Image 1 (cartoon, helix red, strand yellow):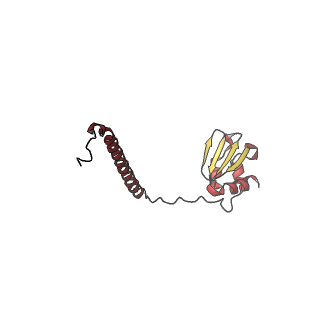
Image 2 (spheres, rainbow, N blue to C red; image 1 turned 135 degrees about the vertical axis):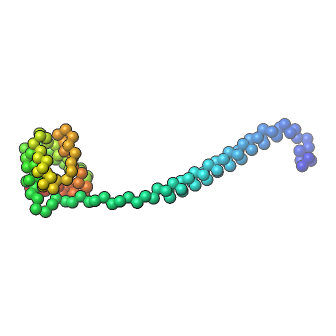
Image 3 (tube, rainbow, N blue to C red; image 1 turned 180 degrees about the vertical axis):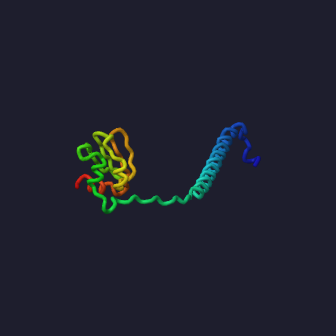
Length: 138
């Protein structure tokens, strides 16, 4: 080894060897980081398996329920300014919310709703179009 380094100033080798050592340490640190990250992700994926209970499906309009009863409980057709089925929601804009008969809606099988200002929103999942068609096209 001494013959290889003969005539070479060892001070000239310090910088290249330091850079090479730093690169090797950086590669090892990166490899360790990736290994620990994958190991952590694998344990998190195993821990996240949670059994979620099935939600009850909302029923379509009850058989024997008169659509006119629902419309009457909403305050009549004159009280409904607009209606629209958007995905799983039925949105009804009313002229006067004080005309709503809550007991009449419950008796007619109308699903739970959210009243915000003059807008009544009902989440009915896949039956929103059916509800809109049967109530407002009858």
